[in-house]
Structure formats: C-alpha cells, structure tokens
Amino acid sequence: MGTDTPSIAVPEPASLARRLWELATLFLKLGTISFGGPAGHIALMEHEAVHKRKWLSQEYYLDLVAATNLVPGPNATEMAIHIGYLRAGWAGLVVSGVAFIVPAFLITLALAWAYARYGALPQVGAILYGIKPAVVGILVMAVWRLGRSAVTGKTAAAFFGLVLLGTLAGLDDVLLMVAAGLLMVLWQQRQRLPWLGLLVLGWPAPALPLALNRTADNRLGQMFLYFLKIGSVLYGSGLVLYAFIQRDVVTGFGWLTQKQLIDAIAAGQITPGPVLSSATFIGYLIGGTTGAGLATVGIFLPSFVIVALTGPWIPRLRNWQVGKAFLQGATIAALALIFKTGILLGQSALVDIWSVLIALASTVLLWRYKADAIWVITLGAVAGILKSLLAI
Image 1: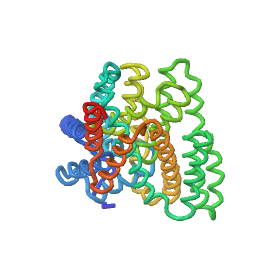
Image 2 (image 1 turned 180 degrees about the vertical axis):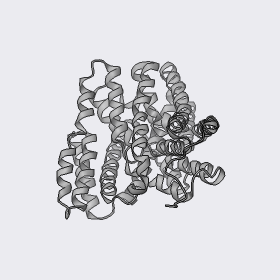
Image 3 (image 1 turned 120 degrees about the vertical axis):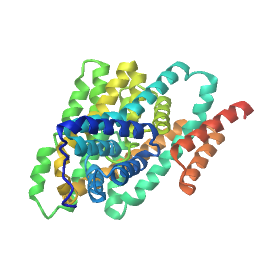
Image 4 (image 1 turned 90 degrees about the horizontal axis):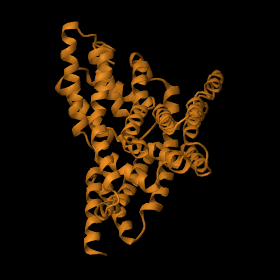
C-alpha cells in the first residue's frame, strides 16, 4: 500500500460540511443509477473516487476491495462506507452509507406498495409469469460464475457437497456457513494447533443472534433481529440472502409464500443500488412501511459497524491467511445455498414449456451475451405479457 495514503482523512472543521455534501451527492447519484450488481457498483465507485475525484489511490482502493471480501456484509455498500470514512471521518461513514442505500430503499418501497395493491391483477400476473423464470436464469448464472472460482479442487468440492447435503437435510443455513468457514481455517491452518482453541471459544458467537431471533415477543421485532443476524453473517453474493429467506421466512416462519420470494428477488434485481434492498420489499410484505424500515435497517446496520471496526486494520487484513481461509469456506457454503435455492425456486417458476423457454433464453443472454440482469428481467416481463395477449 502506498505510504502517501492515510488510513483515514481527517478534514479541517471548515471543510467538513463541504466534504459531507460531496459524499451525499455522489452516493445518492450512484445509489440511483448503479445497476449490474456489486461488481458494477464497485467499478462506478472506483471511477468516481479514484480517477475523477482522486480521493484515494488505486492501490488503497484495491486494499478496500480485498477487505470487504474478507468480512460479512454487502461489498458495494461497505465500499461506499469505507470511502466516506476515509473522506470525512465518522460523519462521512454514516452519510455515504445512508446516501447509497436510500434511493434503493425508496424505489423498492414503491414497488412493494404497488405489488401489494395490484399484484393480483391479471396483467400484473402476466408480467410476473415471465419474470420468475428469468430470475431462475439469473440464479443459474450466479452458481456458474461463483462455482468456477470457488469450487476448485477436491477439498472445495467436498465442502460444497457436505454443505449442500446439510442444507437439504434441514440444518441451519447460517451455522452451515460459519461451520464451513471455521473448518476451512482448521484444514488450511492444521499445522498451527493453537488456533483450535480460539475457534472453539468463538463457536457460540453465531448462536447469540439465533437465540435473540427466536425469543422476540412480536413478529416485527423478530423480523428485525432476523435481518440483523443475516446482515452480520452474510458472505458471498447478495443472492445468498434469498437462500436464507427461502429456508427461514418461507419454510420456517411462514411469513412469505414461495411466489412472493421470487417476486422479491425480481424487485431486488430491477432496482438500482444494493441487491439487499430486497429486504425492504420482504419487510413491507410482512409488516407494511414499518416492516420495510426495520428490515432495511437490520440488514444494513452491521455493515456500518463492520467498517468502523475494520477500517483502521485494512492494510493487515489483506495478508491475513486465516481470514482468507474463512472467506473461502464461507463462499463455498454460500454457493451451495444458492444452488439449493435455485432448485426450489425452479420448482415454483417453471410451470410449463413457455416458462422453461424463458429461463433457458435468460441463461443464454447472461452467459453468451453478458446481458445485465435488469434487461433479462425486462425481457422476461415482455415475454409474459406477449403470452397473455396471444393466449398461448
């Protein structure tokens, strides 16, 4: 890392307001126009913060990218928070993160309101008929892309198979991810036995939010703690969120139907900003506007805490072998959970030959032509409308 780049920029009092305004306007803009998932969001931030505004060096930006991959939470959102922290301290940390999240929250909230009010109308049903198999295609490509880089070698394949068997057998998805990460650390660091004691002592930590999640007195409180838990342990693609939702919210709590989950995934894909804004949609369906707000705060709040804790340690995290090993195991587990979710959602979305064709066409567009997810979703909706009009 370049020595000329500080770990945190401490602004002069007179310039703090101006820097906060710059952060707010930049991340409100990026939160409104940034489609294409975390990779696209991070690329836009790199262009704006490094090349255009020169707030930090290219080398330090790569350090931030590496660090966000070593810790839980949505990568793009955490990158926005890191940049705000470097530019304007603690106030910048809050302003940049909130500004990046707010546009997606408002857009998704409007979609959820319209869905709850009009989702049962025939024309809306036709749109959703085409969107659902398109979402299956997106999941297929997510598994393929992640699998090529994550499942390499016999050890990774064995981890994938064990997690898949565990989740199909009904084991808790969060604990499976944590266990996969810890076991990968033990496997790669097996010559350094003192780590075993620390890992054993750390094992009960994931059980705390799980216990809180089950003891909340009301559904909104339980939902908030549930999303807080997910935001604290989520590794890998944002699509892992849907694996958790399918397992817990659909099958476990029974708050959503399988159909509503697919529609929530579609809402997260067609809106700009963080993919995890699907939590807003889900929260609205469970508890109205209050539920949308609680779900959004719950899923994103851990990211602010994680950045605050890890920001000063970025230069060391990039070379931390234990952290890399845990991330590798958790990523493989995340892939297995996405794979299972794709199977379950496919059973709900692929109901006839036309829906199968839409799913296949979506997969080809994503794989062969590198189409953005929003265009695939749009074409799926058009196909659903055409089928309805032609009555085929």
